[in-house]
Amino acid sequence: MKALVISGGGSKGAFAGGVAQYLQGELGREYDLYIGTSTGSLLISHLALNKIAEIKEVYTNVNQSSIFNRRPFLVKQDKFGQDQISINHFKVLRNFFRGSKTFGESKNLRKLITNTLSKEEFLLLKNGPKDVVVTVSNLSLNETEYKSIKDFDYEDFVDWIWISCNYIPFMSLVTKNGCEYADGGFGSMVPIKEALERGATEVDVIILETEVTHYSNLPSKNVFSLLSNLHGFMMDRIEKQNITIGKYVAGHQDAIINLYYTPTVLTTNSLVFKKEKMKQWWESGYQFAASKNIDNNEIKTDE
Image 1 (cartoon, rainbow, N blue to C red):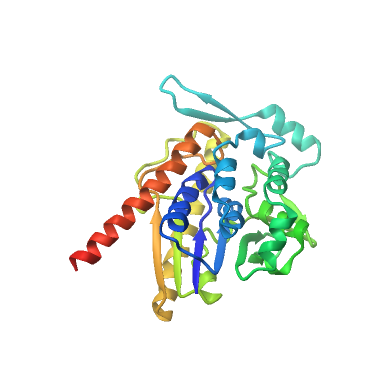
Image 2: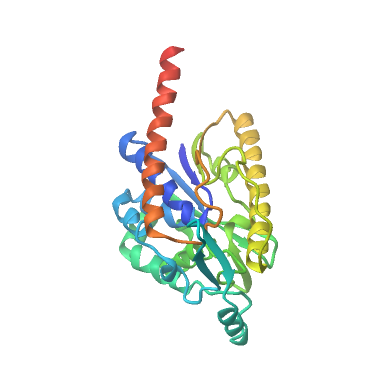
Protein backbone atom coordinates (compact mmCIF):
# COMPACT_ATOMS: atom_id res chain seq x y z
CA MET A 1 0.00 0.00 0.00
CA LYS A 2 1.49 3.31 -1.09
CA ALA A 3 0.84 6.69 0.53
CA LEU A 4 1.65 10.31 -0.22
CA VAL A 5 2.11 12.63 2.77
CA ILE A 6 2.37 16.40 2.34
CA SER A 7 3.36 18.62 5.26
CA GLY A 8 2.06 22.04 6.18
CA GLY A 9 3.74 25.12 4.80
CA GLY A 10 1.27 27.76 3.61
CA SER A 11 2.27 29.32 0.30
CA LYS A 12 5.15 26.83 0.03
CA GLY A 13 2.53 24.25 -0.93
CA ALA A 14 3.23 25.31 -4.52
CA PHE A 15 6.59 23.53 -4.25
CA ALA A 16 4.85 20.37 -3.02
CA GLY A 17 2.51 20.56 -6.00
CA GLY A 18 5.45 20.56 -8.38
CA VAL A 19 7.04 17.57 -6.66
CA ALA A 20 3.75 15.65 -6.73
CA GLN A 21 3.25 16.51 -10.40
CA TYR A 22 6.57 14.86 -11.25
CA LEU A 23 5.98 11.82 -9.03
CA GLN A 24 2.53 11.13 -10.47
CA GLY A 25 2.88 12.52 -13.98
CA GLU A 26 6.41 11.47 -14.93
CA LEU A 27 7.13 8.50 -12.66
CA GLY A 28 3.58 7.20 -12.78
CA ARG A 29 3.35 6.79 -9.02
CA GLU A 30 -0.09 5.68 -7.86
CA TYR A 31 -1.12 6.07 -4.24
CA ASP A 32 -3.80 4.32 -2.23
CA LEU A 33 -3.69 6.88 0.56
CA TYR A 34 -3.21 10.66 0.60
CA ILE A 35 -2.65 12.47 3.90
CA GLY A 36 -2.12 16.21 4.19
CA THR A 37 -1.64 18.84 6.84
CA SER A 38 -2.60 22.47 6.28
CA THR A 39 -1.54 23.38 2.72
CA GLY A 40 -1.08 19.66 2.12
CA SER A 41 -4.79 19.20 2.82
CA LEU A 42 -5.59 21.65 0.02
CA LEU A 43 -3.55 19.66 -2.49
CA ILE A 44 -4.42 16.04 -1.84
CA SER A 45 -8.00 15.85 -3.15
CA HIS A 46 -6.97 17.07 -6.59
CA LEU A 47 -3.86 14.88 -6.58
CA ALA A 48 -6.02 11.86 -5.75
CA LEU A 49 -8.29 12.81 -8.67
CA ASN A 50 -5.17 13.23 -10.82
CA LYS A 51 -6.37 16.73 -11.67
CA ILE A 52 -2.96 18.31 -11.28
CA ALA A 53 -3.45 21.03 -13.89
CA GLU A 54 -6.50 22.30 -12.01
CA ILE A 55 -4.80 22.57 -8.62
CA LYS A 56 -1.70 24.09 -10.25
CA GLU A 57 -3.95 26.81 -11.68
CA VAL A 58 -5.22 27.55 -8.17
CA TYR A 59 -1.82 27.61 -6.49
CA THR A 60 -0.16 29.75 -9.12
CA ASN A 61 -2.93 32.37 -9.19
CA VAL A 62 -3.85 32.72 -5.54
CA ASN A 63 -3.25 35.97 -3.63
CA GLN A 64 -3.93 37.41 -0.17
CA SER A 65 -7.56 38.20 -1.02
CA SER A 66 -8.11 34.58 -2.04
CA ILE A 67 -7.35 33.53 1.54
CA PHE A 68 -8.34 36.35 3.88
CA ASN A 69 -11.63 38.21 4.15
CA ARG A 70 -9.95 40.14 6.99
CA ARG A 71 -6.19 40.22 6.57
CA PRO A 72 -4.46 41.12 9.86
CA PHE A 73 -1.11 42.22 8.46
CA LEU A 74 0.49 44.57 5.96
CA VAL A 75 3.19 43.56 3.49
CA LYS A 76 5.69 46.17 2.33
CA GLN A 77 8.98 45.89 0.53
CA ASP A 78 12.14 47.45 1.90
CA LYS A 79 14.83 49.07 -0.25
CA PHE A 80 16.41 45.66 -0.84
CA GLY A 81 13.16 44.21 -2.18
CA GLN A 82 12.52 42.06 0.87
CA ASP A 83 9.02 41.71 2.33
CA GLN A 84 8.45 43.50 5.62
CA ILE A 85 5.42 42.29 7.59
CA SER A 86 3.61 44.28 10.23
CA ILE A 87 0.30 44.14 12.07
CA ASN A 88 -2.61 46.03 10.52
CA HIS A 89 -3.75 47.52 13.83
CA PHE A 90 -6.95 48.99 12.45
CA LYS A 91 -8.22 45.70 11.01
CA VAL A 92 -7.13 43.70 14.05
CA LEU A 93 -8.95 46.03 16.45
CA ARG A 94 -12.03 46.02 14.26
CA ASN A 95 -11.95 42.23 14.23
CA PHE A 96 -11.81 42.13 18.03
CA PHE A 97 -14.70 44.60 18.30
CA ARG A 98 -16.72 42.23 16.14
CA GLY A 99 -16.18 39.49 18.71
CA SER A 100 -13.52 37.51 16.87
CA LYS A 101 -10.96 35.54 18.90
CA THR A 102 -8.28 35.88 16.22
CA PHE A 103 -6.42 38.72 14.52
CA GLY A 104 -7.80 37.88 11.08
CA GLU A 105 -10.39 35.76 9.28
CA SER A 106 -9.90 33.32 6.39
CA LYS A 107 -13.46 32.71 5.18
CA ASN A 108 -12.41 33.47 1.61
CA LEU A 109 -10.29 30.33 1.73
CA ARG A 110 -13.34 28.19 2.42
CA LYS A 111 -15.08 29.76 -0.58
CA LEU A 112 -12.00 28.97 -2.67
CA ILE A 113 -12.15 25.32 -1.61
CA THR A 114 -15.80 24.97 -2.60
CA ASN A 115 -15.08 26.69 -5.92
CA THR A 116 -12.25 24.29 -6.75
CA LEU A 117 -13.55 20.98 -5.34
CA SER A 118 -17.04 20.22 -6.65
CA LYS A 119 -19.59 17.89 -5.07
CA GLU A 120 -19.23 15.56 -8.04
CA GLU A 121 -15.46 15.34 -7.54
CA PHE A 122 -15.98 14.79 -3.83
CA LEU A 123 -18.38 11.89 -4.46
CA LEU A 124 -16.02 10.38 -7.03
CA LEU A 125 -13.30 10.26 -4.39
CA LYS A 126 -15.56 9.16 -1.54
CA ASN A 127 -16.94 6.24 -3.55
CA GLY A 128 -13.58 5.35 -5.07
CA PRO A 129 -10.77 3.09 -3.84
CA LYS A 130 -8.42 5.85 -2.65
CA ASP A 131 -8.54 7.41 0.79
CA VAL A 132 -7.99 11.13 1.36
CA VAL A 133 -7.25 12.23 4.93
CA VAL A 134 -6.76 15.72 6.37
CA THR A 135 -5.16 16.62 9.70
CA VAL A 136 -6.79 18.97 12.21
CA SER A 137 -5.99 20.10 15.76
CA ASN A 138 -8.77 19.82 18.35
CA LEU A 139 -7.85 22.57 20.83
CA SER A 140 -10.73 21.72 23.17
CA LEU A 141 -9.62 18.10 23.67
CA ASN A 142 -5.88 18.67 23.08
CA GLU A 143 -5.89 16.03 20.36
CA THR A 144 -4.76 15.65 16.77
CA GLU A 145 -7.53 14.24 14.60
CA TYR A 146 -7.46 12.75 11.11
CA LYS A 147 -10.56 13.17 8.96
CA SER A 148 -11.12 10.70 6.12
CA ILE A 149 -13.23 11.64 3.12
CA LYS A 150 -15.01 8.29 3.56
CA ASP A 151 -16.62 9.44 6.83
CA PHE A 152 -18.20 12.79 5.89
CA ASP A 153 -20.54 14.52 3.50
CA TYR A 154 -19.38 17.29 1.18
CA GLU A 155 -19.93 20.32 3.43
CA ASP A 156 -18.30 18.66 6.45
CA PHE A 157 -15.24 17.58 4.51
CA VAL A 158 -14.81 21.05 3.02
CA ASP A 159 -14.90 22.34 6.61
CA TRP A 160 -12.15 19.92 7.64
CA ILE A 161 -9.92 20.94 4.73
CA TRP A 162 -10.44 24.60 5.63
CA ILE A 163 -9.87 23.99 9.34
CA SER A 164 -6.65 22.12 8.61
CA CYS A 165 -5.26 25.31 7.03
CA ASN A 166 -6.32 27.83 9.68
CA TYR A 167 -3.07 29.07 11.15
CA ILE A 168 -4.29 30.83 14.29
CA PRO A 169 -4.19 33.52 15.61
CA PHE A 170 -3.85 34.98 12.10
CA MET A 171 -6.68 32.97 10.53
CA SER A 172 -10.10 31.71 11.64
CA LEU A 173 -10.71 29.68 14.77
CA VAL A 174 -13.55 27.29 13.94
CA THR A 175 -16.04 25.74 16.34
CA LYS A 176 -17.39 22.42 15.07
CA ASN A 177 -19.19 19.63 16.92
CA GLY A 178 -18.82 21.63 20.12
CA CYS A 179 -15.01 21.87 19.90
CA GLU A 180 -12.58 24.56 18.76
CA TYR A 181 -10.35 23.51 15.86
CA ALA A 182 -7.27 24.96 14.18
CA ASP A 183 -4.41 24.17 11.79
CA GLY A 184 -3.43 20.51 11.77
CA GLY A 185 0.24 21.49 11.97
CA PHE A 186 -0.12 22.37 15.65
CA GLY A 187 -0.51 18.65 16.33
CA SER A 188 1.08 16.85 13.38
CA MET A 189 3.08 18.80 10.84
CA VAL A 190 4.23 15.71 8.90
CA PRO A 191 1.78 12.84 9.55
CA ILE A 192 4.03 9.94 8.49
CA LYS A 193 3.06 7.83 11.50
CA GLU A 194 -0.64 8.11 10.64
CA ALA A 195 0.05 6.87 7.10
CA LEU A 196 1.94 3.87 8.47
CA GLU A 197 -0.76 3.10 11.02
CA ARG A 198 -3.32 3.09 8.20
CA GLY A 199 -1.36 0.33 6.49
CA ALA A 200 1.09 2.09 4.19
CA THR A 201 4.19 0.07 3.33
CA GLU A 202 5.81 2.77 1.18
CA VAL A 203 5.41 6.48 1.84
CA ASP A 204 6.52 9.45 -0.26
CA VAL A 205 6.78 12.45 2.06
CA ILE A 206 7.00 16.05 0.86
CA ILE A 207 8.38 18.29 3.62
CA LEU A 208 8.17 22.02 3.03
CA GLU A 209 11.33 22.89 4.93
CA THR A 210 15.02 22.34 4.31
CA GLU A 211 16.58 19.26 5.87
CA VAL A 212 19.16 21.42 7.66
CA THR A 213 18.44 24.89 9.08
CA HIS A 214 20.11 27.48 6.83
CA TYR A 215 19.23 30.73 8.55
CA SER A 216 18.71 32.44 11.89
CA ASN A 217 15.66 34.59 12.57
CA LEU A 218 16.31 38.31 12.73
CA PRO A 219 15.40 40.15 15.95
CA SER A 220 11.63 40.70 16.22
CA LYS A 221 10.60 44.16 14.99
CA ASN A 222 6.97 44.00 16.06
CA VAL A 223 4.30 41.76 17.58
CA PHE A 224 3.65 40.05 14.26
CA SER A 225 7.27 39.07 13.70
CA LEU A 226 7.57 37.87 17.30
CA LEU A 227 4.49 35.64 16.96
CA SER A 228 5.71 34.45 13.57
CA ASN A 229 9.11 33.50 15.01
CA LEU A 230 7.45 31.76 17.96
CA HIS A 231 5.11 29.77 15.72
CA GLY A 232 8.01 28.91 13.43
CA PHE A 233 10.00 27.58 16.37
CA MET A 234 7.11 25.38 17.56
CA MET A 235 6.33 24.07 14.08
CA ASP A 236 9.98 23.24 13.49
CA ARG A 237 10.10 21.19 16.71
CA ILE A 238 6.86 19.38 15.84
CA GLU A 239 8.08 18.67 12.31
CA LYS A 240 11.38 17.15 13.43
CA GLN A 241 9.60 15.05 16.05
CA ASN A 242 7.08 13.80 13.47
CA ILE A 243 9.87 12.75 11.11
CA THR A 244 11.86 11.01 13.85
CA ILE A 245 8.81 9.07 15.04
CA GLY A 246 7.84 8.25 11.46
CA LYS A 247 11.28 6.80 10.74
CA TYR A 248 11.17 4.79 13.97
CA VAL A 249 7.77 3.28 13.17
CA ALA A 250 8.78 2.59 9.58
CA GLY A 251 11.89 0.77 10.78
CA HIS A 252 9.82 -1.54 12.98
CA GLN A 253 7.28 -2.20 10.20
CA ASP A 254 9.84 -2.65 7.40
CA ALA A 255 8.19 0.22 5.54
CA ILE A 256 9.95 2.45 3.02
CA ILE A 257 9.99 6.25 3.43
CA ASN A 258 11.12 8.57 0.64
CA LEU A 259 11.68 12.13 1.90
CA TYR A 260 11.50 15.21 -0.32
CA TYR A 261 12.73 18.33 1.50
CA THR A 262 12.97 21.75 -0.13
CA PRO A 263 16.59 22.20 -1.27
CA THR A 264 16.62 25.91 -0.33
CA VAL A 265 14.72 28.26 1.98
CA LEU A 266 11.70 29.35 -0.05
CA THR A 267 10.36 31.98 2.34
CA THR A 268 10.46 32.92 6.02
CA ASN A 269 6.79 33.88 6.02
CA SER A 270 4.46 31.36 4.40
CA LEU A 271 1.36 33.51 5.06
CA VAL A 272 2.36 35.79 2.20
CA PHE A 273 0.86 34.58 -1.09
CA LYS A 274 2.44 35.99 -4.25
CA LYS A 275 1.53 34.52 -7.61
CA GLU A 276 4.93 35.09 -9.21
CA LYS A 277 6.84 33.36 -6.44
CA MET A 278 4.40 30.47 -6.22
CA LYS A 279 4.72 29.85 -9.95
CA GLN A 280 8.49 29.68 -9.50
CA TRP A 281 8.15 27.33 -6.51
CA TRP A 282 5.88 24.96 -8.41
CA GLU A 283 8.39 24.73 -11.23
CA SER A 284 11.33 24.36 -8.82
CA GLY A 285 9.48 21.53 -7.02
CA TYR A 286 9.01 19.72 -10.32
CA GLN A 287 12.67 20.18 -11.30
CA PHE A 288 13.89 19.17 -7.86
CA ALA A 289 11.90 15.90 -7.92
CA ALA A 290 13.28 15.20 -11.37
CA SER A 291 16.90 15.78 -10.30
CA LYS A 292 16.46 13.78 -7.10
CA ASN A 293 15.14 10.75 -8.96
CA ILE A 294 17.88 10.98 -11.58
CA ASP A 295 20.44 10.98 -8.76
CA ASN A 296 18.76 7.97 -7.12
CA ASN A 297 18.74 6.05 -10.40
CA GLU A 298 22.44 6.80 -10.93
CA ILE A 299 23.26 5.54 -7.42
CA LYS A 300 21.31 2.31 -8.01
CA THR A 301 23.06 1.81 -11.40
CA ASP A 302 26.50 2.32 -9.83
CA GLU A 303 25.68 -0.19 -7.12
